[in-house]
Amino acid sequence: MITYEELNTENDSITELSNVLLYLFQERSMCDTGACCELFHRYMNKVNAHIDVVDKNLYGQLLNNDSVEVRNLVKNFMSGSQEIKKLMNSYTKQWCPNKRPDELLVGNHELFLKETEGMFEMVLQRIQDETEKLYPLIRKIRGNLDTAA
Image (cartoon, rainbow, N blue to C red; front, side):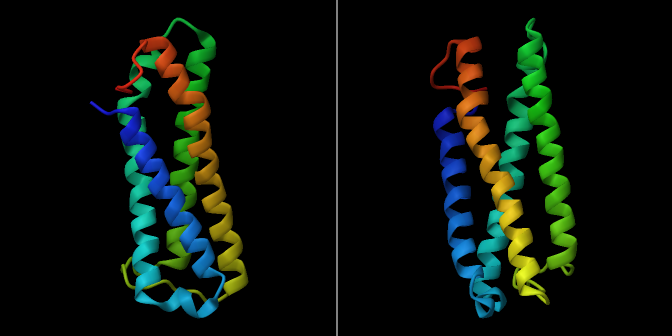
Protein backbone atom coordinates (compact mmCIF):
# COMPACT_ATOMS: atom_id res chain seq x y z
CA MET A 1 0.00 0.00 0.00
CA ILE A 2 1.32 3.42 -0.93
CA THR A 3 -0.04 6.76 0.19
CA TYR A 4 -0.23 10.04 -1.65
CA GLU A 5 1.93 11.51 1.09
CA GLU A 6 4.68 8.98 0.28
CA LEU A 7 4.41 9.69 -3.45
CA ASN A 8 4.52 13.43 -2.86
CA THR A 9 7.51 13.06 -0.52
CA GLU A 10 9.35 11.13 -3.25
CA ASN A 11 8.48 13.82 -5.78
CA ASP A 12 9.66 16.57 -3.42
CA SER A 13 12.97 14.77 -2.88
CA ILE A 14 13.51 14.33 -6.64
CA THR A 15 12.68 18.00 -7.26
CA GLU A 16 15.03 19.14 -4.52
CA LEU A 17 17.89 17.01 -5.83
CA SER A 18 17.39 18.25 -9.39
CA ASN A 19 17.45 21.88 -8.21
CA VAL A 20 20.63 21.36 -6.19
CA LEU A 21 22.34 19.47 -8.99
CA LEU A 22 21.44 22.03 -11.64
CA TYR A 23 22.94 24.71 -9.44
CA LEU A 24 26.11 22.73 -8.76
CA PHE A 25 26.59 21.60 -12.36
CA GLN A 26 26.72 25.22 -13.57
CA GLU A 27 30.28 25.27 -12.27
CA ARG A 28 32.37 22.86 -14.35
CA SER A 29 34.72 21.97 -11.48
CA MET A 30 31.79 20.76 -9.36
CA CYS A 31 30.96 18.06 -11.90
CA ASP A 32 34.12 16.17 -10.92
CA THR A 33 33.53 16.11 -7.18
CA GLY A 34 32.58 12.93 -5.38
CA ALA A 35 29.79 14.71 -3.51
CA CYS A 36 28.19 15.93 -6.73
CA CYS A 37 28.50 12.52 -8.33
CA GLU A 38 26.96 10.83 -5.30
CA LEU A 39 24.03 13.26 -5.36
CA PHE A 40 23.59 12.68 -9.07
CA HIS A 41 23.46 8.90 -8.68
CA ARG A 42 21.07 9.29 -5.76
CA TYR A 43 18.85 11.37 -8.05
CA MET A 44 18.93 8.74 -10.82
CA ASN A 45 18.11 5.96 -8.34
CA LYS A 46 15.22 7.94 -6.82
CA VAL A 47 13.71 8.69 -10.23
CA ASN A 48 13.93 5.05 -11.32
CA ALA A 49 12.50 3.80 -8.02
CA HIS A 50 9.63 6.30 -8.14
CA ILE A 51 8.71 5.41 -11.71
CA ASP A 52 8.79 1.71 -10.80
CA VAL A 53 6.49 2.27 -7.81
CA VAL A 54 4.00 4.26 -9.87
CA ASP A 55 4.12 1.84 -12.81
CA LYS A 56 3.68 -1.27 -10.65
CA ASN A 57 1.11 0.05 -8.20
CA LEU A 58 -1.13 2.65 -9.81
CA TYR A 59 -1.90 1.67 -13.37
CA GLY A 60 -3.51 -1.76 -13.04
CA GLN A 61 -6.81 -0.61 -11.61
CA LEU A 62 -7.02 2.26 -14.09
CA LEU A 63 -6.37 0.16 -17.19
CA ASN A 64 -9.53 -1.81 -16.44
CA ASN A 65 -11.65 1.32 -16.11
CA ASP A 66 -14.69 1.66 -18.38
CA SER A 67 -13.66 5.16 -19.47
CA VAL A 68 -11.59 5.43 -22.65
CA GLU A 69 -10.32 8.78 -21.39
CA VAL A 70 -8.98 7.18 -18.19
CA ARG A 71 -7.34 4.31 -20.08
CA ASN A 72 -5.74 6.72 -22.56
CA LEU A 73 -4.33 8.87 -19.76
CA VAL A 74 -2.81 5.80 -18.14
CA LYS A 75 -1.33 4.66 -21.45
CA ASN A 76 0.22 8.11 -21.87
CA PHE A 77 1.80 7.86 -18.42
CA MET A 78 3.08 4.37 -19.21
CA SER A 79 4.67 5.50 -22.47
CA GLY A 80 6.10 8.52 -20.62
CA SER A 81 7.72 6.16 -18.13
CA GLN A 82 9.35 4.26 -20.97
CA GLU A 83 10.55 7.48 -22.58
CA ILE A 84 12.09 8.75 -19.34
CA LYS A 85 13.86 5.44 -18.71
CA LYS A 86 15.12 5.38 -22.30
CA LEU A 87 16.45 8.93 -21.94
CA MET A 88 18.07 8.14 -18.59
CA ASN A 89 19.74 5.02 -20.00
CA SER A 90 21.10 6.96 -22.96
CA TYR A 91 22.27 9.75 -20.66
CA THR A 92 23.99 7.27 -18.35
CA LYS A 93 25.81 5.60 -21.24
CA GLN A 94 27.17 8.96 -22.35
CA TRP A 95 28.05 10.64 -19.07
CA CYS A 96 28.51 7.71 -16.66
CA PRO A 97 29.94 4.93 -18.82
CA ASN A 98 31.68 3.16 -15.92
CA LYS A 99 28.55 3.31 -13.71
CA ARG A 100 30.67 4.24 -10.73
CA PRO A 101 28.96 6.34 -8.06
CA ASP A 102 32.02 8.56 -7.75
CA GLU A 103 32.43 9.39 -11.41
CA LEU A 104 30.88 11.48 -14.14
CA LEU A 105 32.80 11.85 -17.38
CA VAL A 106 32.12 15.39 -18.54
CA GLY A 107 34.19 16.19 -21.59
CA ASN A 108 31.89 18.83 -23.05
CA HIS A 109 30.44 20.84 -20.18
CA GLU A 110 28.04 22.85 -22.34
CA LEU A 111 26.52 19.70 -23.88
CA PHE A 112 26.43 18.01 -20.47
CA LEU A 113 24.46 20.96 -19.01
CA LYS A 114 22.06 21.04 -21.94
CA GLU A 115 21.32 17.30 -21.74
CA THR A 116 21.08 17.36 -17.95
CA GLU A 117 18.65 20.27 -18.00
CA GLY A 118 16.56 18.49 -20.64
CA MET A 119 16.40 15.28 -18.63
CA PHE A 120 15.58 17.10 -15.39
CA GLU A 121 12.90 19.13 -17.17
CA MET A 122 11.26 15.96 -18.48
CA VAL A 123 11.25 14.39 -15.01
CA LEU A 124 9.91 17.55 -13.37
CA GLN A 125 7.14 17.76 -15.97
CA ARG A 126 6.27 14.15 -15.17
CA ILE A 127 6.08 14.98 -11.46
CA GLN A 128 3.78 17.90 -12.18
CA ASP A 129 1.56 15.74 -14.40
CA GLU A 130 1.34 13.06 -11.71
CA THR A 131 0.36 15.64 -9.11
CA GLU A 132 -2.15 17.50 -11.29
CA LYS A 133 -3.62 14.67 -13.38
CA LEU A 134 -2.85 11.14 -12.20
CA TYR A 135 -3.31 11.43 -8.44
CA PRO A 136 -6.58 13.42 -8.68
CA LEU A 137 -7.92 10.87 -11.17
CA ILE A 138 -7.13 7.99 -8.82
CA ARG A 139 -8.71 9.85 -5.90
CA LYS A 140 -11.83 10.45 -7.95
CA ILE A 141 -12.14 6.84 -9.10
CA ARG A 142 -11.22 5.19 -5.81
CA GLY A 143 -12.80 7.75 -3.52
CA ASN A 144 -9.84 7.36 -1.17
CA LEU A 145 -8.05 10.54 -0.19
CA ASP A 146 -5.11 8.91 1.60
CA THR A 147 -4.07 5.73 -0.19
CA ALA A 148 -3.05 5.68 -3.86
CA ALA A 149 -2.73 1.92 -4.19
